[in-house]
Length: 78
Image 1 (cartoon, rainbow, N blue to C red):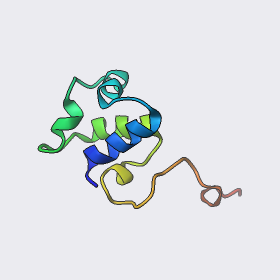
Image 2 (cartoon, rainbow, N blue to C red):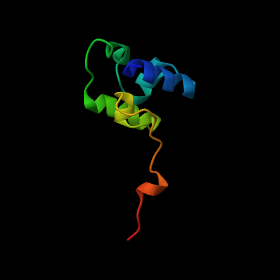
Image 3 (cartoon, helix red, strand yellow):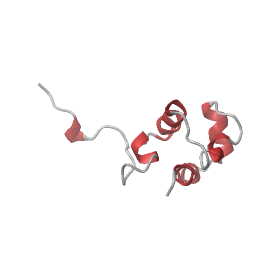
């Protein structure tokens, strides 16, 4: 699954369109669809990741599963 397919999946799960996502995070209309042919800037990818609370690595295909915040094992008390 490429980045655009993952974003469409996440939008579908949230019950919004890609166009609505673009409006909510301040991207121009059709920007995400263009990512099929051009490499998006990290700032824009980070906006999408933050909106859905997933990691940038997940969107870029470097992780198998979504990131949903800190895991209990990630926090250690000293």
